[in-house]
Length: 170
Figure (spheres, rainbow, N blue to C red):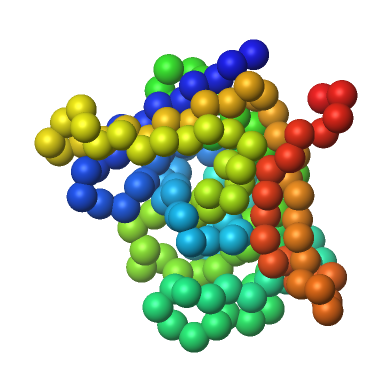
């Protein structure tokens, strides 16, 4: 099955898409070319309200690059099924998404999705169709992916990177 998801984005802004949470509420997700892991910015309480199936894990991570010093020992949660969907009903499902959670509500989006999560898809940015808007497109031959956590070499409790992969036979 071939899925093609298309999102309209503001031309001179961050690439922010809207997806439905587990409860059907919209969340804003910024696609980040420099991130290694997804990050939930709105804290644990808001995460549980949007994704009631989310559970805390025994993993941690270190987050850099938010315009401040490193955030150490950030708790990592797991969402059994994280669905990226567009307005036309197309979707891609990430099974067992590991998601660091911080309290940083000053950002204009709820979550960061790193491009490393989309490493098994074709994605593109098209700014040629409009002076004000562009389009972010994700194309995939599979509808469902599992998430491959990569840990720091010297400490396998600390999450370092997230990648999507296709489980054989799935």
